[in-house]
Amino acid sequence: MVNKLIHSTLLIAAMQLMIACNSSTKHETTSAPVKDTLVAYETKHVMTKAAQDSLTPEAVLQEFIEGNKRFTSGNLTQREHSDAIRKAVTGGQYPKAMVLSCLDSRVPVEDVFDQGLGDVFVGRVAGNFVNTDLLGSMEFACKVAGAKLIIVMGHQHCGAIKSAIDDVHLGNITAMLSNIKPAVAMSQDFEGEKSSKNDVFVKAVNKNNVRNTLAQIRSKSEILREMENKGELKIVGAYYSLLTGKLELID
Image 1 (tube, rainbow, N blue to C red):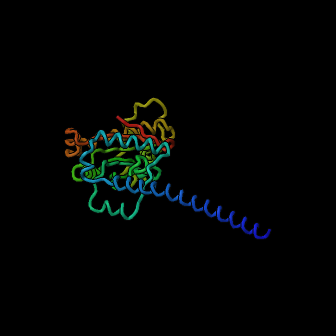
Image 2: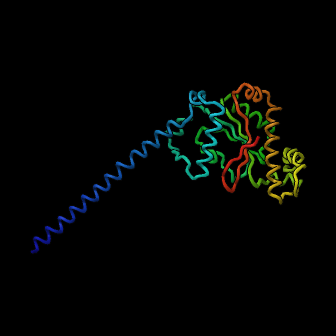
Image 3: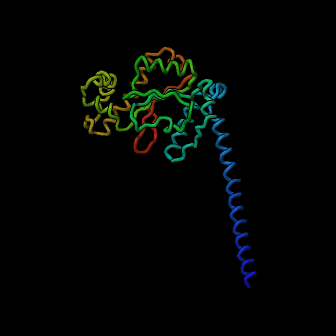
């Protein structure tokens, strides 16, 4: 009786061990291909000169629109930042686009468009306006480094826009806000309360600020203007909602 009990106990233990091994094997065989796929995707994702040359401004804009849809749906691309990926971009950079964004910490530019390492130049300044330095940076990004798209992106609840509306005077902020004041002047035909407390008015000024920035780029940069006229570059405006994460293109 004792021998039968021992035999039964050993048999059960052996069966449990086999089940555990099989479960472990299944886990290993299913997880490895996922990792391999991710590495393959990321290696392919790193931009090259050939990949950049094959792009059109229209295609890049569409890709960024689709990337924003992934961002708002919570379906961002999984990206690996291994040594191999970092080393792959050390030989040069071939971004698809240049994004001029506000300084605001709530606007994660690469994430908003679901872009990765080496995909996008980002310029940031409170109120997303242009000056000589930013225009020069854009010319480098597009004429020298080959970017096919410029996006000027304003955003909901922008503090710089509200400060320009309120005519804030404080240190160097005063001079900075002078770059945004034209958008306030452009918005004087707004029907309703022209106040920083009126979100609808703030949005109207924000969108006019983007339009003014687009006009400044075209008027002050002969290089970018010519590239756009030749179809080598697309320059567009956008408005980003902090609440929804969605982008609204601005004419």
